[in-house]
Length: 204
Image (cartoon, helix red, strand yellow):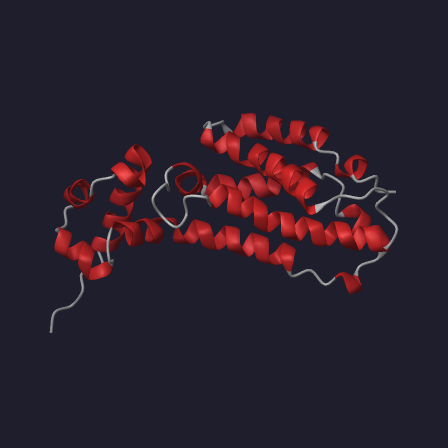
């Protein structure tokens, strides 16, 4: 009985990552991936159904981290929060936002693959879909603030989506444009000044 050579897997994933980053999913060449990894196409098809499943394997850890980020913010139990805690969720906190940037910095390569190189895969609208998921989460926070009389103006879900998309694009773009960490630190300060949610929703 043959034993699977697990040393192939990291080489294959890294070669695929490099090829997808260089050419995007649609133009990436499976033979080039295999040649650079020193494996046969047969070895790939023993592990994956094809190029798209291989792309999914490359970005899986990154997607899992982002899914967990969304899950934490959509599974909030508001009943245990005081009015002050609900109000504070809308205050832009530079250190908290910088923590998010630190998380994304660690996975920045695969994050860019999801955002910019995934056309032709199930991930091709990842940025928009992420913003939609976060819109749902933000809307729940807003409705809770509104119910408690903390939000002074009416906001539609469409308006919330426009605002969330703008906000998350401001998070994505530094990685797409290959900002240095120092530049991201400064960018974080700009975002905190620019996106004043308490004013946008008249949080009292």
